[in-house]
Image 1: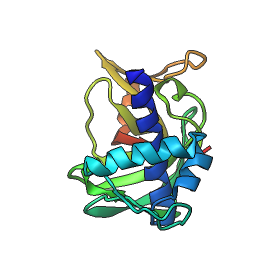
Image 2 (image 1 turned 180 degrees about the vertical axis):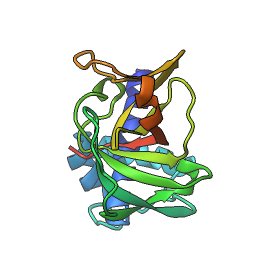
Image 3 (image 1 turned 30 degrees about the vertical axis):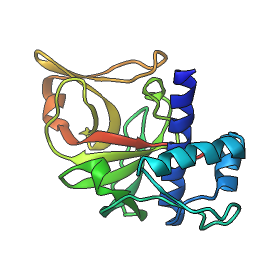
Length: 203
């Protein structure tokens, strides 16, 4: 029962966060019910609990678009560069397609950018086509990090598994093969950033 309660909280939180970032204001209970499939009376009960804990500000005017306001504190505008292949490499860094407002508390310190996932090679870690991958810009990574890397002039999103004398870019999908970087290709390999958060597409 407790696990189901936690899953309900998580579903409501994710919907609220995604809705807020898309619209600039929070959803009503009607919006949450439609977006999550959770009955409105249950949504209201969970929102009241979240209000009492100080997590949100929640108005009483049910059915209005302004009934709910998410408190996110300091925010930052993050540029979105387009899509990144979760399969074979591509080049997403052409133009900034839009900017997305994200809570600073989600990100921490650093410089960030967003790429939209395209492909299925990372689906087993919950990265599906259309999801937004928030990347901290950096040129180093720890073994096991999910990275955006340039290889032979093109960019891909994979798990970083360095080995002696070579680098393995591992897809999180058993139907895809590792990309092995060795020999002279290592000279054409550049880490562009590390994934820090996934913003799920609303489906």
